[in-house]
Image 1 (cartoon, rainbow, N blue to C red):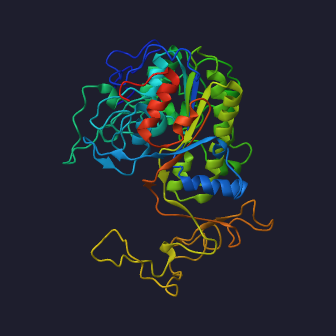
Image 2 (image 1 turned 90 degrees about the vertical axis):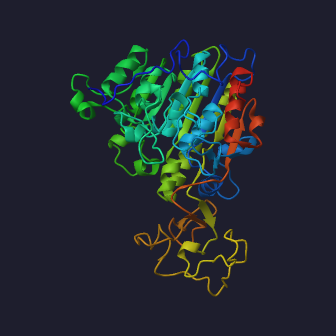
Image 3 (image 1 turned 30 degrees about the vertical axis):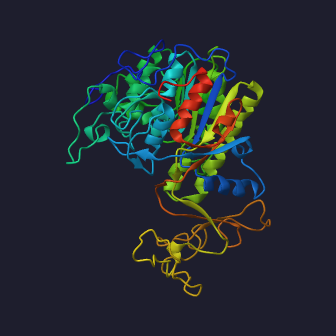
Length: 505
């Protein structure tokens, strides 16, 4: 038996969205915006990438007066990212990737962990489904598992983001009620169909590149190939279902380089793709060295989509590891992943400059971990012997002057033995900042030294509710140069492709 619960619902076909699918209040017109100046939209998402992430990466790689590629784009704004509580319109001030991705994919706020359903568990059509239905070419690229929240929200629907596959389970796919028991299974069985199974059968994205091979099984490859996809690597030997993991073969960047045209699925790792900094330290013959970079996947996906449809294309690209390394409070790898993402931005913008009819949007789903740039030679409150207290007993908002004098503002040696990538790196109690040289530092300054000018710390290991930056290039880019809510991104990209406002906008 392929899965403990076998559920098959086709969300979209190559001709039109199937009956009973997500076409509802935000359905697509049957053709793209005729005469529209914009033919293509490339949406790049740095998962977890807040304003400080961008600043820190700029200073790390280009110095105080330099700029990342994304910062060179002419239009700049901000995005509010909050979600809502389940079964209500009550704001949840800190979002996760699933609810945020649902917001820009569908134009609807939802609860954390939901994939392209609203707060009341109603399926909502996604921009990629609508573009596909209308005849645009479509692509979805990520350095995470392709079934993970951000890519999943463009071409699947699930009550819980953990319902990725390969097997179904109530714990992964059904929300719990207040009493701790699972909700009843919904009438729309798509919503509890493993995301991998949906992706392999709905044909929503023409180009699918990323990780997550372990989420798929041999019958998924068969379903994809029946729709005309070229599947790189192998999802396993269908004659040996009990040995699927052993018979699977990840795709390689050489496989990808050999693709010239058509629909393609390339999964280059059984899980998430390897962090670039870690990959650089591996031997040249290590299997991970056969994973393409995000920039390489971006270039190839654009080349495969450009010209595939006379109407144009929609492409989503995620740099997922910025978030995952921020959760781990690993400043060095976080910075490296921002740089890798920014290289993908350059690849997209280079194409847009030549094409003249491509809108490039660069943003984030949320900020992760409260990334901070602190003054050189200082320390965080977490390292302090006497952190500032809330001295206003009648006001828990801490709006008073902290009762800490400069003489009391000292580091507690029991809580910090120095910078985390320097002498104190091996102390499990260490709250110290990580330090990095920048191009502005003298040549002999090293990462991890007190002399390095970039001092970075984290507030937590989880998401924050801070607004995130947004950058845009190309026709229609000025629409994004404002302070906006994440649900507005859906409407703006919809207008860019179709030339009209969506029904729920």
